[in-house]
Image 1 (cartoon, rainbow, N blue to C red):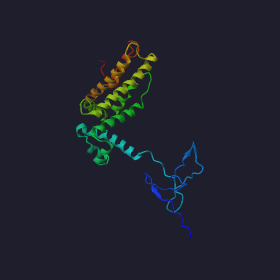
Image 2 (cartoon, rainbow, N blue to C red):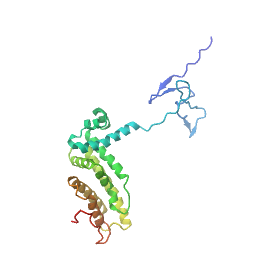
Image 3 (cartoon, helix red, strand yellow):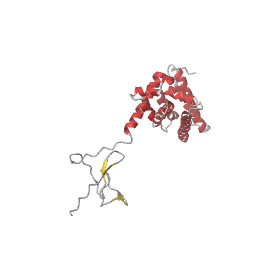
Image 4 (cartoon, rainbow, N blue to C red):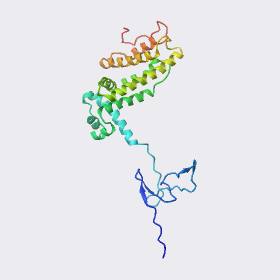
Length: 264
């Protein structure tokens, strides 16, 4: 009796939805053969996928992990600041943000579980963008680049101060954790700048650097709140004065006040 031909390998579907043929001599379609001891197994062949016409299919472009989701998430973060600037804290809801980016409330909720979590992520993203410009140089104000970044984005400073106030409430654990971590991280970064300044003779030797770092952060937050209430407040002038007070410049070398701003 003639022998029946062997059945073709049974296709299966992997997690990405691609069909693969599993046979004794074939590896996953379109992928390199397994390596043995750092070398490709000479007995293992790489199967090149083909299209419906039998022609060799062009290799699929490998996308980054969840690229579309990452782009959508960033779009939501950016749009949140705009909506907050227009509506304020009380009227900036997840639904309003979802409408502004053409999504449903449920879709935005999948990215961010609550409004507080979304607001905290907006602030974290602002920190990441600002701290990429952080530099160790001769100026103490380099450590406070985040202040300049916040003032350049309408609505961001108002969101920052709103969330800072709510972090003091016992039920806002996400906001509290964010600010505790943020201040600890920034104090450490500012101390590095101060240590460098002291090493090159630009920072006084008789001041505790940890306290100076806390003072700089406190001045930044306090001046930003005053600026929100009254835009005539000159934040840069305030930070420049602190730079001078902590530095080693001799008396009488403080820069002239900005035009239109009283010397005090």
